[in-house]
Length: 175
Image 1: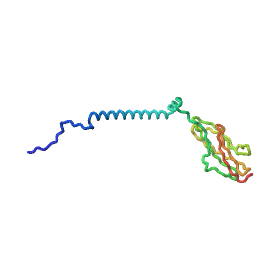
Image 2 (image 1 turned 180 degrees about the horizontal axis):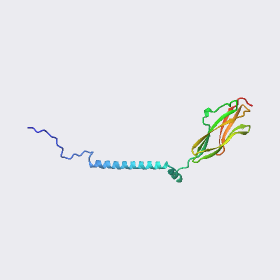
Image 3 (image 1 turned 90 degrees about the horizontal axis):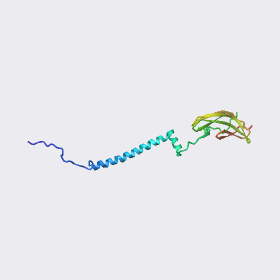
Image 4 (image 1 turned 120 degrees about the vertical axis):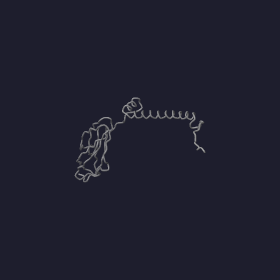
């Protein structure tokens, strides 16, 4: 009677290049180098995150590597395309402008809307605006503009820091 053939495990040690001790040493070195790179990237990421905080900005400024953010005030018309080019016959005009305070603290601004009269300015509206840090404020005023020539100039201005806008309007019927 024939015995069925049973495959038996090999009793000899077979070494391939993948399981050789030198392979494990090479993998170990590669892993260690890769781990060092990963650790370096991790440390750099943490440092960059800390530098984005207020403490990080303070450290950079104190070390002379960074300057404080520039502060300024912007004065502009909210929708320049909607500005009139001609004054209504009534002489009444609603005018809006924006004060943008790009600073770390609240700013208080004195503004004025005036009309050119020869070499001087006729005040049409004045006021004070308190604008929070990194905030904008839209000011809207109804004005009565007097025209004595073919066109007139309106000026929106703030005193400190000095800024101004100019708007030219055609007059309907010079008076």
